[in-house]
Length: 221
Image 1 (spheres, rainbow, N blue to C red):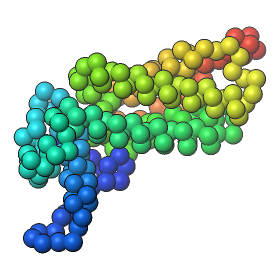
Image 2: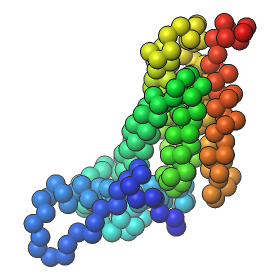
Image 3: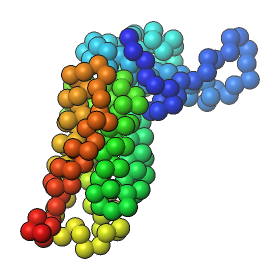
């Protein structure tokens, strides 16, 4: 079973010392929580949501069931916590990257490159949360919609702030649709290939995603 890439979405904690130690209880619980989220992510990517339970998470994370239930109410709570971490890291990376472009197409290219590059940098987490996560049902879909809507609003706001007068009357829904399209193409590539070359998609996707959010005035030029 493949492992996450340390330091991208999650950081693998150092092994806890045996016997008596000086670590605070909070440090021990935080390390165990991180290991359990990592284990849930790896299991989700490898066997899908229905293929594992609390027992498998505990075995892979090398923690007791008591330690698990001290951190999480059930398997879903652990998976959602891992997903929320994934989304938080994604949002941070994308908001920083998009602001680097020198013009609007450059911003879109930086955004797309950061999105696909983050997926490539941890394929296990990307596959878990970009492909398998929807099997968790409505709560997972609600989280996904909230993240996509947040990103769409950020990108539209960035365009208004940095390139005034270029947004025209392009609705927020156009930006939401563009991000949905980007997510789906990345998801399909992750589902189809063990090691997809996502970075090769950047030039083409950047071009047509720009066109998806063109204002009517731009289309007439």
